[in-house]
Image (cartoon, rainbow over all chains, first blue to last red; front, side):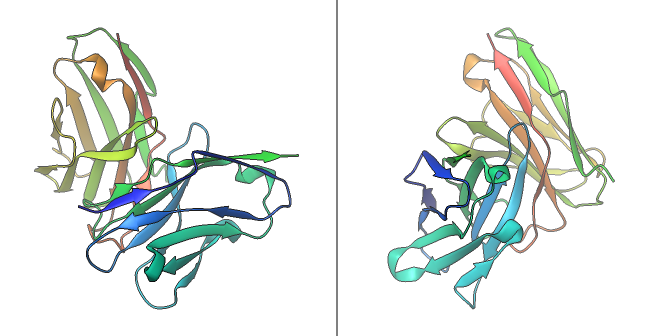
Length: 112
Length: 114
């Protein structure tokens, strides 16, 4: 079965600094990859997803992610972090909505 | 348009008690899902439904039952709650079941079983 590893449990960055959240996956076929964000007390919101084609995917709120097959990675990036980006971020892999595997999440803290 | 709503938001149960969590969506979605979220483990799928009157097991179905009597509602039941079921429960819905069909999540229900 597919699986996802998010190596960083907690990351702290200063407002205005760049951000990269790591995600590694294990999947036997071509993966469908996702990044979700969960703000405190809220449900998950889809940031972006990759199915095929261009390996650099643009999402909402200024986020992007790059699929690297050779490294089995799908890292999330943002050039300049805002205080409102403080949240928990989940990477997921799956071939269908009833077949999704989520990572354990990375909590992002933004320092003023 | 409320999206996906969940009732209740918080609940405390004693071991052995039963309860039902209600999920409602107003987007006319066919697919609905129940997940649990535990620290350090991300979300895991409990049960899902591909349409009114149909349900299927997910990754962690034991100890839970579900029903989808109306298209807009998806109920999650705990017949005899156990401390291991202390978790945050999320409902989601999607138009279809493919990975290309975005899932929309509710705000969650925090359940504590003593």
